Image (cartoon, rainbow, N blue to C red; front, side, top):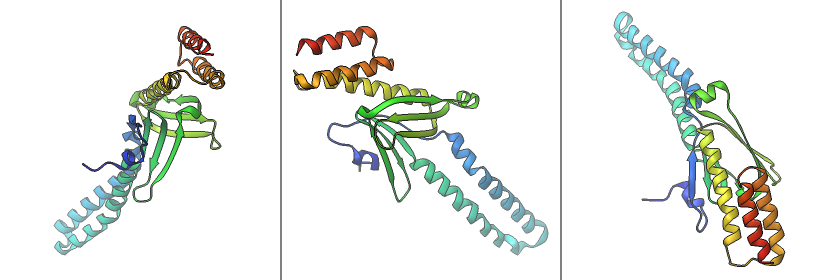
Length: 208
């Protein structure tokens, strides 16, 4: 089976840990007008054929316009994806012309989630990712299951931090203060507990 567009973007030993789209409510909101027009045209055409002129069935051709718009909205919704890998967060949009934005988990400095009352009821919300890059902020609006997305991202970042400590055996002494600072950042954001931070810090200091 051929690899998907997202799978072809992955680097060596990079894997997808979570993937989602905007909530179905967003799609419904986009296609609601098209559905109303399709229903109205279909009913009007049926009445015209039955009571006015049997040759009026040609009016059904007007259905092509809202149906084409509906198909475009469906394709755009399907191809807008939000992916977390073990290395980065990726946003993919576009059907034929693809637009890809990604942020390394290393550069993520903060993560905010906003859910309205309706969002909590239907399980959608906004995720705002603050990074140390020039772009600064990535905003994922009305994504499905935002809590699961946030948890998956925090877990992937925590595991990356742990792997950085383990990889390559004994790190260089010049790298140890930077590693401790990264662990401290995870502690401040609640990803690591005080005990976990103290234990990992002690392990690094013992290697100096």
